[in-house]
Amino acid sequence: MARIRGRELSLDKIVANEKEFGLQVAANAARVNAKLQARSSGKMFQPPRRDPLADRNIVEHIQRSIKAGARVRFGSREGPLVRRLPTPMHEANWKVLSAEDRKTRKKLKPTDSWIKTMWLPHPDHTGNMLKALSWGCSMSGVGARSLTLHLGDEVIDAAKADPLGFVRHMQMRMARELKRAFRSVKGAVFPEYFFTVEDTDLGRPHVHGGIQLPNEDPAYLGIVREALKKAGGNSHHREAGRQLHMPELETPARWVNYLSKWVLGSAVRHDGGHFAATNGIRRQGRAWYVKARSGEVVLDPKSSWSDFGFVDLLEGLSSGSKRS
Image 1 (cartoon, rainbow, N blue to C red):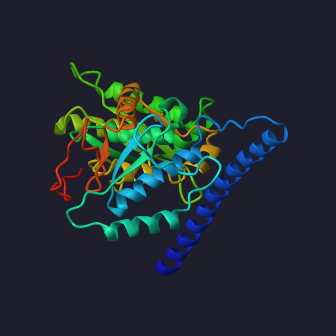
Image 2: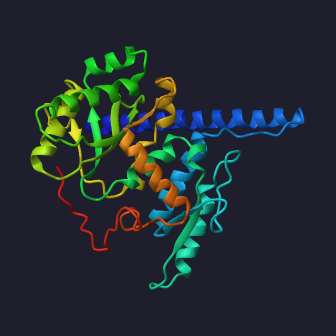
Image 3: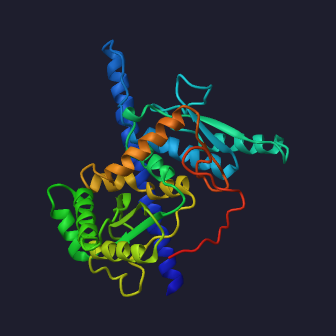
């Protein structure tokens, strides 16, 4: 029975992938039609300022480059010579790009440093997917954790019924529980965080994101964990001790690429809303993004943290870090 169930899950994932890809194709088709209409009327086509498909391609390109072993530096149109993906009107050919990376890697000597420079749009002209990358990468090593929270039925029903939307409901709920938890703690500094709600045919809605703790004090971490569990409600994962997962955030670029895998489908289910972040994380993320576009940030394949500016992780960083 277990093998049959595994096959069913694999089929479910294939179907969900096809639906997500269908949304990408539909969005790209709408842009092509807009371009053709503009051309036939003699007008200039202006691509959307916040293009989720273009953002997604850039995030995936970054992740694929890091996985290939390259260090990634960013730039703007006014900055250093950069390679820009063929967006927003055309999808990137990942097979071709991966083949080019393999050829480049073979030519390199063991002592050579491989740096790829990529274009980033202006922060005012991009959406939350690239902003989420900046939010994750701007977190300092101490207290930076990924976040996965499973939700109870009562929380899911309340979020779906909220006229403000699912994501906004969860943002307010998490903020409320954190304030209650720290009400009796003098001088407490609230954690900064961001998240998205993943909602697909594969399972129930749940939260993925990142959280920045001001310190690693066990008592502080315990308060945060209990507050987030209350915000999640009575999930069936709670009894098994799997309702909340907060390991150290060692690879933010990879994590953001993972948590955005169903972002288009989830946005359709939640009427367009899919990311939320505290004001503090938005400010530090924007500062990181501006530095990145000026060429001052490099993502290292050993950790995918920026090794200039906010964080400097050594190559010998142990992969067996303590998790809670």
